[in-house]
Amino acid sequence: MKSVKTLSIFGLISVVGLTSFWLAGNKDKLSDCPQVASTVQVGKNSVLVGNRALLKDTINLPLSELTADLQIVKLDPADNALVGNGYALVTDNYILVKGQRQNPYKLFDKKGKFLNAIGAFGQGPGEYQNVYHEQLDEKKGRVYLLPWQSDKILVYDLKGNVLDPIRLPMNVPKGKFFVDPSNATVSVFALPWTGNKYVAWNQKLTGEVNAGIEPGFLAINPRNANGQFSGFNHEVNSDQNSPNLLNVFFFTFDPRPDTLYHYDTKTNKLLPQFTVNFGKEKLPIHSYTELPNHFLVYVSEPKQISETETVTQDHRNFIVEKKTQKGAFIRLKNDFLGNADIWPSFSNGYFSQNMDPGRLRDELEKILTTNKNLSNAMRSKLTGLKNSITENDNNYILYAKLKK
Image (cartoon, rainbow, N blue to C red):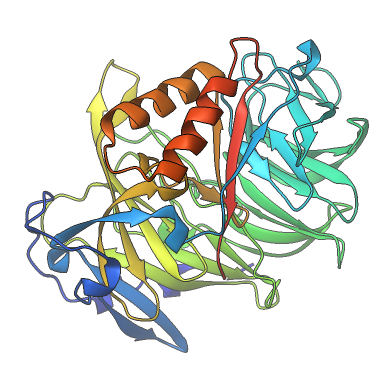
């Protein structure tokens, strides 16, 4: 078992003043923006460190700079195929829509044909309520679900049949995982709660732990000052060239300096990759996402709405390009769909968006009414799509594959 106490890098970063979060200038594209990050050597590891004080610009970032062509899939409208507004996991051949409000996960092919539900909502064997993370393994024909507080990963085949679960060595608070079928192992990441045995570990599918890492300096009290905590924010993805390296990031409503790591399952180490120096002023709530060529940073402020509940507000996003280290605050625009404003929702190598038909129709109507610069071809495309939507439709899934 290893401790992560040697991995903190914030003592190596010089502290600079924090300027206003609202922005001083605007550029047309990321290549026009200044360098806002630098590389710091931490042992054998190079860590990219963004400097909040250097971020001065805001750009409209087209989705096409990050992804290939957008696909719009109308899901099967059959009664048993109806979905809510849950997250949509897109893979090479499937779309898996997260269940909500007693509606189980629903599996579709990439054309939107309904295949079947995955498991069922409930408390019995193979049933679930709140699920925090999911994985679809096409090669093995498996769907894996990890509930919010559980000591096992639920396993199903692609027909929705319940299979034997993967037993875990502890109850996992808001965990993420990656099942690697090539060597019959699973890597699991949990909130670094004080008292937990591991923050990250690798184990056999049969349950035996190969190696694990203690929470160490990452440890947080599950009952912090606000009684609020959030989870493991970064989607866990396997690097196809280095399948033993998995991305992991922790954040809380009680903000603190933090880092995006790669978990090296071969050496059982968390390797720091990216962080942001926010300076001396109060830290915002922040989290990171790693894309093939960029890091995305999400910042917000907490708002207490009751004695036991905190939400976030004043959301802002900025991007740092890995190669040039240039960066800016961004407004992500769906230029495949008339430059609609979209939230940067990326996971599993895709941008994805799940929209109910009424909302999609309203968005299209808004674009057609307010955007006077649409080309004739785009206007015709959007008008045709809007007119094809009916109130009896199931949801639509919009997705685009990330560029390498």
